[in-house]
Image: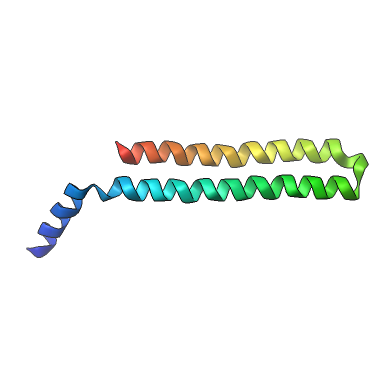
Length: 83
Protein backbone atom coordinates (compact mmCIF):
# COMPACT_ATOMS: atom_id res chain seq x y z
CA UNK A 1 0.00 0.00 0.00
CA UNK A 2 2.79 2.46 0.86
CA UNK A 3 4.44 1.86 -2.55
CA UNK A 4 1.35 3.16 -4.29
CA UNK A 5 1.33 6.29 -2.14
CA UNK A 6 5.02 6.93 -2.88
CA UNK A 7 4.48 6.45 -6.61
CA UNK A 8 1.60 8.93 -6.58
CA UNK A 9 3.68 11.47 -4.65
CA UNK A 10 6.58 11.13 -7.09
CA UNK A 11 4.24 11.61 -10.03
CA UNK A 12 2.74 14.72 -8.45
CA UNK A 13 6.22 16.23 -7.89
CA UNK A 14 7.16 15.73 -11.58
CA UNK A 15 10.66 14.44 -10.81
CA UNK A 16 11.18 13.49 -14.46
CA UNK A 17 11.50 17.14 -15.51
CA UNK A 18 14.33 17.78 -13.06
CA UNK A 19 16.13 14.59 -13.96
CA UNK A 20 15.78 15.39 -17.65
CA UNK A 21 17.35 18.81 -17.08
CA UNK A 22 20.25 17.30 -15.14
CA UNK A 23 20.74 14.63 -17.80
CA UNK A 24 20.80 17.16 -20.62
CA UNK A 25 23.23 19.36 -18.69
CA UNK A 26 25.61 16.45 -18.25
CA UNK A 27 25.23 15.56 -21.92
CA UNK A 28 26.02 19.14 -22.95
CA UNK A 29 29.13 19.14 -20.75
CA UNK A 30 30.25 15.90 -22.39
CA UNK A 31 29.79 17.36 -25.86
CA UNK A 32 31.72 20.50 -24.90
CA UNK A 33 34.62 18.41 -23.61
CA UNK A 34 34.56 16.33 -26.79
CA UNK A 35 34.66 19.39 -29.05
CA UNK A 36 37.52 20.84 -27.02
CA UNK A 37 39.49 17.62 -27.35
CA UNK A 38 38.88 17.48 -31.11
CA UNK A 39 40.16 20.99 -31.77
CA UNK A 40 43.05 20.59 -29.31
CA UNK A 41 44.17 17.55 -31.30
CA UNK A 42 43.91 19.53 -34.56
CA UNK A 43 46.01 22.37 -33.14
CA UNK A 44 48.59 19.92 -31.80
CA UNK A 45 48.71 17.99 -35.07
CA UNK A 46 49.05 21.15 -37.11
CA UNK A 47 51.89 22.34 -34.89
CA UNK A 48 53.70 19.05 -35.39
CA UNK A 49 53.03 18.68 -39.11
CA UNK A 50 51.84 21.92 -40.76
CA UNK A 51 51.40 20.37 -44.22
CA UNK A 52 48.63 18.08 -42.88
CA UNK A 53 46.44 20.97 -41.73
CA UNK A 54 43.82 20.55 -44.46
CA UNK A 55 43.36 16.85 -43.84
CA UNK A 56 43.24 17.33 -40.06
CA UNK A 57 40.70 20.12 -40.36
CA UNK A 58 38.44 17.99 -42.56
CA UNK A 59 38.49 15.14 -40.06
CA UNK A 60 37.89 17.62 -37.24
CA UNK A 61 34.78 19.08 -38.90
CA UNK A 62 33.28 15.62 -39.42
CA UNK A 63 34.00 14.70 -35.80
CA UNK A 64 32.63 18.04 -34.60
CA UNK A 65 29.37 17.48 -36.46
CA UNK A 66 28.98 13.99 -34.98
CA UNK A 67 29.53 15.26 -31.43
CA UNK A 68 27.10 18.14 -31.89
CA UNK A 69 24.45 15.83 -33.34
CA UNK A 70 24.67 13.76 -30.18
CA UNK A 71 24.17 16.93 -28.12
CA UNK A 72 21.12 17.86 -30.22
CA UNK A 73 19.69 14.37 -29.76
CA UNK A 74 20.07 14.94 -26.02
CA UNK A 75 18.14 18.20 -26.35
CA UNK A 76 15.33 16.43 -28.20
CA UNK A 77 15.19 13.73 -25.53
CA UNK A 78 15.04 16.48 -22.89
CA UNK A 79 12.00 18.06 -24.55
CA UNK A 80 10.34 14.67 -24.93
CA UNK A 81 10.86 14.00 -21.21
CA UNK A 82 9.40 17.43 -20.35
CA UNK A 83 6.20 16.69 -22.28
